[in-house]
Length: 262
Image (cartoon, rainbow, N blue to C red; front, side, top):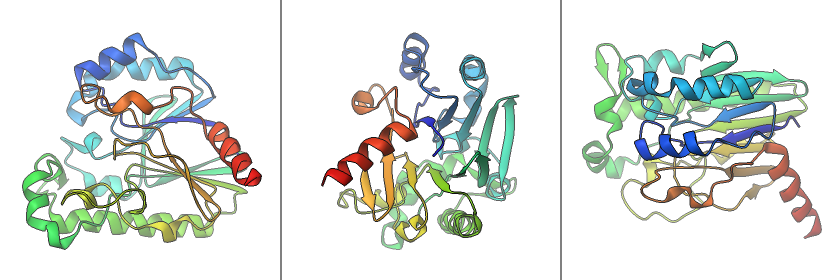
């Protein structure tokens, strides 16, 4: 399996997060880096050019997955759902619903979104800023129904790509969490962060997610290892359990050995 360094939810549009990473650069541990969503709001891209330059200098390739925050300020979510691979630098790319093949490993990138609970509809519409800051297209704001439609599109894309893949190894990077089993439902925002998409895991070696700002221990779903490495909001101290040296091979090999010992 190809070795890829990964982290998500850097939120560089927030001053404390930006200052942290400028004074504490990520330890370079692999040739490839994946940012699993929520690098910064779309409107803050001009303020994070330094980070794109740093990635370009330190990694052969960097892939930045669209998270919901990366969509704040965009007017083309519909286009992103149809597949996206945009060069920010020659070797730094914004991606969504796209895949790449590196040697024997196929890597799938999807925001995934989630299936919002209809029972919490009004609460979510009132509390989730996604509906205020994201447009599905130039004339249509993101609605509850279009949010769930985005999740369906991502699910269908990922299911087909995994089914048709001939790669020996498969890694999925999603922003939203593909399971509801890691934590109990605590409030009406629960479905904004996660859905029961475990059926998509079949045939996948490693699945990396973000968005929840809560890193749980790696967990096996039959033959698929589910992990996260989220930084989160600095002021809220979400970052205390992230790993600056986390790579796909390091976490997979460690957990595989632990599983074998058991």
